[in-house]
Amino acid sequence: MNQWKEKEPIIPQKEHEPKKKRKIPWSLLYIAATIVAVLLFGLLNQEFGNVFHTISHLTPGFLTLGVLVSLVYFLFEGEIFRLLLRSQGYHIGVREGLKNALIGLYYSYITPSSTGGQPMQSAYLLRDNKIPAGSSTAVLIIKFMCFQCAFVLVSVVSFVGMYGNLQVQNPGIIPLIVLGLVINGCSILFFASLFHKPILHQICRFAKWLVGKIGFLRKRTGLLDSIDRFERDFGSYTDDFKGKQKSLVAGVLLSIPQFVLQMSVIYFIFRAFGYHTVSYWEIVAVQSLLQVSVSFMPMPGASGAQEIGFSSFFRNYFVNDDLYAAVMVWRFFTYYLVVIAGAILVVADQFWYRRKKLRQAAAPIEEPQDQE
Image 1 (cartoon, rainbow, N blue to C red):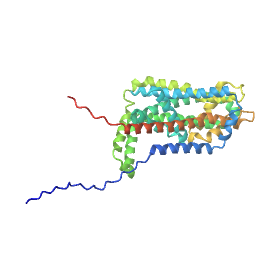
Image 2: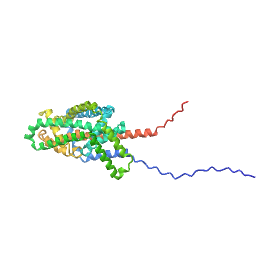
Image 3: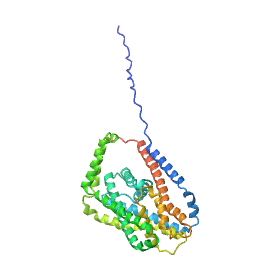
Image 4: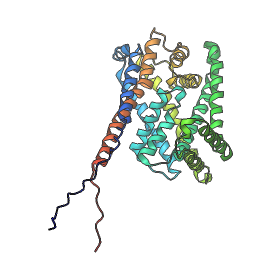
């Protein structure tokens, strides 16, 4: 007699699944690092504590004008970049242009020799606007060259106009001004050479050689292809260059009033201290000469050199024993405020971007409907 046995279902044994590695929350770490950097930034600058007391005793109307001038300067920064970006066929909004301008200034101010601005701008443009790194880097360098041309041009005119006064009042700073003009002029030639394709090719070839020599870079797959892609995208700016000449000329011409606006902040601070015997153009000229003589210093934001240079260039203008107070207020409006505003923007943007990515990850995937 056959006995029927129900076969027990075969339950497959679960293999030991490898534990998933927890992802490092780089965005949160980045936010925390930004906040700590700004806090240390304020704590390590002793003049920060007295600057608000000094500002409270100044003429508020002129200080307000100084802030408005800075805002217009930011608007120029964003709009010039948008103009040059359009010549490459990319379009971003006004808000994106302003965001990009402030991010570039923020990272330039907190990194040695202002080296962090353009790379971070390029990274944000790739993340938010899907603009290839090579194309955005080319436009950012063109933007830098436009500003440098305006910077050197206005500084040369200022130097010629102020040379007689400098010889009488402060001849020791003339060699620094000349050195600054030479270095900034050479920087224009250097960056212009990158748009000569054989030079660009040699630089990218050297980068690929470094990848082959450095172990952790050699292990990164696709890095050599990324360098080739960067070279192709960057070199695309020189293709059809004739069609971009109008944008380039417009960039230089718009950078002249932009630079003058940046140099004008000190005039409104000068007036806020109660001075009115010196013309606007003379103060702007002295400020541009100060800028050109310290701009090549390697410290973040040329810190130290800016304060010392201000004391030397403006000692004959702030004569009521208020030179140090003027330095504090000037640096607060032209440097510290930008760093604080930039840090707030970076933190807010990282939180917003992180929330956006979490929402996208949580959104249900819609299955395609079968067509009858």
